Image 1 (cartoon, rainbow, N blue to C red):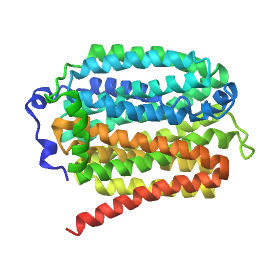
Image 2 (tube, one colour):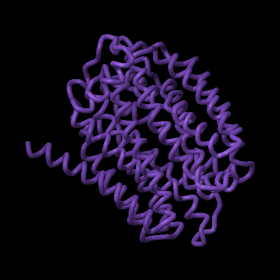
Image 3 (cartoon, one colour):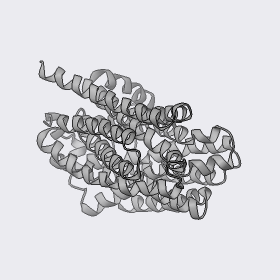
Image 4 (cartoon, rainbow, N blue to C red):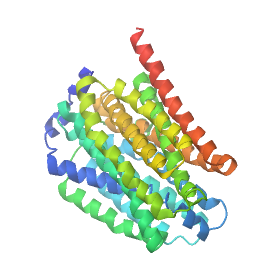
Length: 402
């Protein structure tokens, strides 16, 4: 159930609630999706990127990009509690655009990795927008509002693969990153036009702000459980999407990057879970929904491992994306309610942990794929799903034994 902190606003928040109307919510969801998409363009194109840059370095582009995202979350997202948020969002979109130009022009694998790291850092502008949406929304509808904005993020994650698969097949991978530049600049322009000014409550210095992250982690057990659960689920998610293009290109399917991208459309069914999960979290509390998402992730990997056909992959993708989104929104509901004045920092810990999990999943997936093939990958992804399930069960039994 929502805690008193989830419905009590600070003075600043009270002045800024109810600003978030339908069209502004849509604009923020779209900008969030455009930003997040940049992390995932590389996944369906990884095969042709490796073909241009022989050796193993290019294979770590997804891992480095997610590490950049995690780094940006820990270093930049806390600034949302310290500086004016609209200005911060516009600046980050501009930085992202410059990094995308660098990727599109990368002359070798080393430059590709460095610029991919910068893309990941810049793309964390998505995580400036989400807590701002929570800040501007009616507290009684905060779960549903965050769910709608997260739908935009999930659209970006899933359709980015479809777009990248199509563009890379018909034009090339560099053209995809070149196309991403005007998209980022357009999102920046819309945010500059539509967002209200939103000033933070914190008067802390930046070093103190960063140092306070550890204090928040220690203070809130619910934050630790939510962060570790989502990190495990996203690691499982990243295992699948990192290896999908190689599995589809193999002898079992013999398909190209455009086919891998089409799975993004299939997974878009998960978008439907975001508003629904947010409303359920508002009404019934989040814990049962999070556990459901963890169990469904584990089931999806059983399907991937045992039903190695296109229909099996389709069913597994739908279940896994539904599971991830079903767990993420209630977890954010829990995290944002812990301390309203520290939402940017709470979001830093939660999303930063999630993308560190994603980076670990991507890195391990490449190693396991090379050594053990799809069977090993299925076991790895299932292990992460099992870990998330165990965390939730331990937390549930701990809460009900008190």
